[in-house]
Image 1 (cartoon, rainbow, N blue to C red):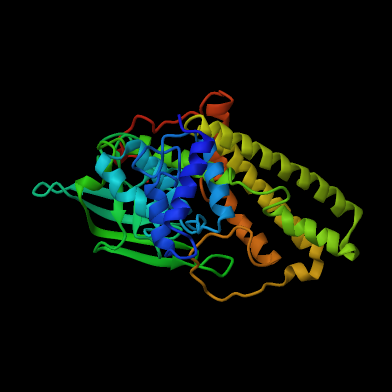
Image 2 (image 1 turned 30 degrees about the vertical axis):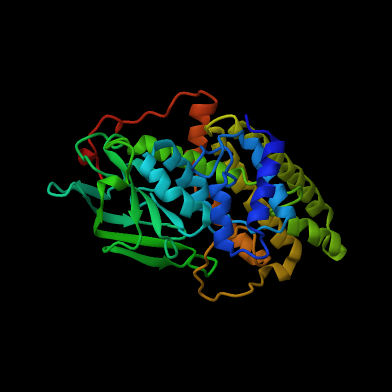
Amino acid sequence: MTTSEALVARVRDLLLAHPPADTDRADFLRARFDAGLAWVHYPEGLGGLAAPRTLQAVVDAELEAAGAPDNDPRRIGIGLGMAAPTILAYGTDEQKRRFLRPLWTGEEVWCQLFSEPGAGSDLAALATRAVREGATGDWIVDGQKVWTSSAHTARWAILIARTDPALPKHQGITYFLCDMHAPGVEVRPLRQITGEAEFNEVFLTGVRIPDGHRLGAVGQGWEVARTTLMNERVSIGGMRIPREGGMIAPVAAAWRERPELRTHALHQRLLRLWVQAEVARLTGERLRQQLAAGQPGPEGSGMKLTFARLNQEISGLEVELLGEEGLLYEDWTMRRPELVDFTGRDAGYRYLRAKGNSIEGGTSEILLNIVAERVLGLPAEPRDDKDLAWKDLAR
């Protein structure tokens, strides 16, 4: 079994062979992956050493102390938090070897082609079609996806499409890895309330996907997608932040630095939200410890719910605390950012950006159902479409 001492020795060997100050960033990251120090809990040969997940902190601390570059995880969060664990769970050996290394090093950015204009909260109602071409065995995909972060910078996408409309909606779906540079893929910006086009809509017209880029069995797409979604909610709701970090940080700083803004009522609200933010942070730490012992479960939905509610309440408090200043907005210039920044820029940005937190990564209403049914064990809501063929559903 790999020990922390053995990992420290391996890190030092890496640093000796590839000094960060003298090594190209991409070359260093590739060498780190090949040394099994990318994500130590992954299998050997795939960036890991089959070591306990908790030992990753040992590696990260040693490399940070040495000034080694990281892989810019915020920029490639969809690949790291969603695509990688799904490929690891369901991919073939060839797929794992092909995709995991450039995904982790950030040489290939990933996006998620799940939501559609008519299939957001009810994702299983998706209408994008994938039809098998008899002569080649390739799949021809037609449809539209929406609310796609990073589509304008992505090289690859995780995609679910309907392959059998005669089956009930959850059964006729298959999961694919889609080349975003393939003919027929069109990405259009979606400008949101912040002024940025952080999201995109993606049109797929006759896009050819080789069967070798199918993830899991034909018709297994919903099961594979659930793995992605559970990891997504953990990555959003269980992000590691320092004490008094995240959205509460600028509010607490303004409170300390601007005594003229204080009122008793705002003080009471700040204390309540500060405590809730700290409880959420500690709960997120416990969730990561549970994750280290196995796969993520439905508990991540509860954390993502809390993340959305707190961000919206805290950003609202910040705007009220700043008074007239809180109504100012730094810049409405149209941007297409390369990463999602929940807490960046000014108070007005944080307030507006937080509105999306209760939609992205699963709407709060859907997550409440998941917590009720899969965590609390309450009866599921009645559904009359569960056993109907997708083609027979009213739309």
